[in-house]
Image 1 (cartoon, one colour):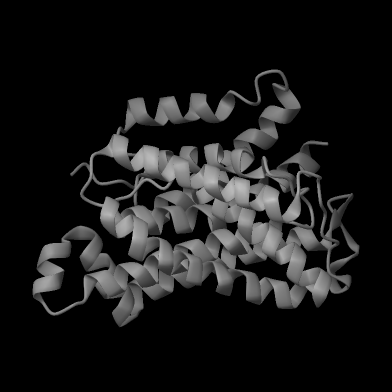
Image 2 (image 1 turned 90 degrees about the vertical axis):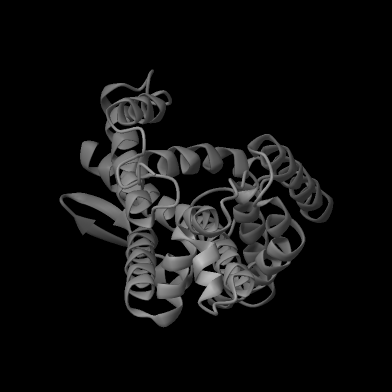
Length: 283
């Protein structure tokens, strides 16, 4: 039982990596705490459901994030760009209102009933590992999380665009003075972050039921991960996502009555020990 729960914790941690990468990217460049990120994840899942019913899961895996990237560019142009210099309370109210709008849109288009997406036929089998039957699709989710983490790390470290992103997240004014179009760069990063939220939604659809409340189920854990890892830190988000997944898995076995509280206990402990988060900067 413990091995199965640890495996499920690893799967959930990988899903949180994909989800929280976008949240950390958007905050790192726009300095906007996007409370609507969970609703973007939900929209990606529902788009994936519609596309998969019309074609197949693999098309949805590519098309839904692409559509969400366009949504992210529009959100940056008409929302996040206007919010980056506003007071935190204003940002919270606007992004929370955006969350409500997207949830109402989803209910209007897809209804309130729970929906499900079948796992792709190619991965619809189980593997025996450590004496337990583990679904191949969930193993694939772990690889998706690892691929996103590795890809983003290499992109930020070795590409010219990644250099600009790191510079703009540290000092956008100086970066702009060096000739970098920070508004265009921010739009691309917000588009990428929103696409990752959509990708997380599509990936989650075959093993989590789709409902208008699914955004609330993941956004709290996502913010816990980002706070523990350090606001705007991708490396911290990667570590915190896996730690949170393992903590929830172990808690479900040994402390089932308190498992829901464990992420918050962990967050409080980390913030007391290091207020900037695991990989956050004190500045």
